[in-house]
Image (cartoon, rainbow, N blue to C red; front, side, top):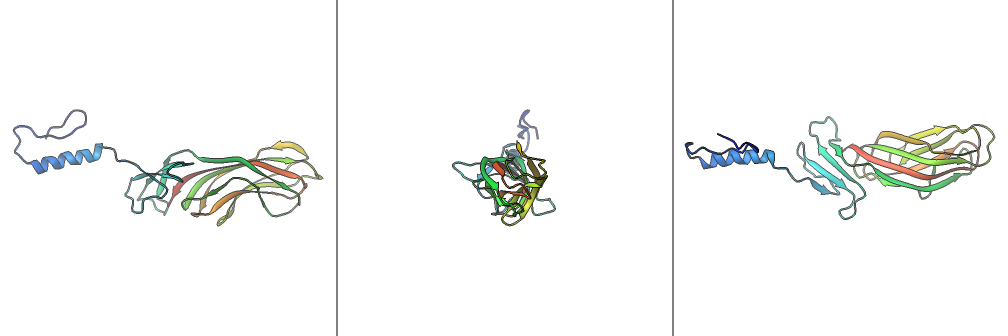
Amino acid sequence: MPETPILLLPYPEPTDPADVPADLQRLADRLEVIVPVAVGFGTTLPASPTDGQEFILVDSLTLPTYHWRLRYHAGRGDANKWELVGGPPLQLGPQGSVVVSTTGDPPTDMTGGPTFVIPRSGVYLVRAEAFVQVTGGFTAPFNTSLSVTGTVSGPVMQDVFVPSGSFAGSRPSISSLRGFTADETIKLQARATGAAGTTFKDGVLSVQPVRVQ
């Protein structure tokens, strides 16, 4: 059966035997291949996806703060079958602050700092940073840390650095691929093992899915 030169749509020759159902079937099969399928858009991924299906995951239908395009990979060997194919990271901040005034305390939340609720269980690329300044109480080098903590996963990322004295400030950052559970909240925490008067402020949290359930 001949085909059109551009879209390769099949059509019968005048001399071909009449077979309307078969001709329409060939045409329909070709259209299935060339006509783009509309990509879904919503706050929840499809419950019964097919291999190769794409979907744009958002947190709001009217004013989304992120839009991540995911493709379903049925042959993937784990449960995280929705793989990212497009969409920028969500960046929160700079915001929040905390002054570590008691040395050796456990990690302390950054008051007013950025937080994010994980929409789907899976693996995410997370980056965090904050401005850190030592203003007093310095007697010797000590450990200072900025961490990302999940309400289910606990501390999952930590950057430890060692100030050598009172200083005008630095902006340490951490970045890592980590697994999280759906609906858990991740946040920034700070800690210092010495020099009361260590200030953490202007925290930034960047989140992007890599593969999710």
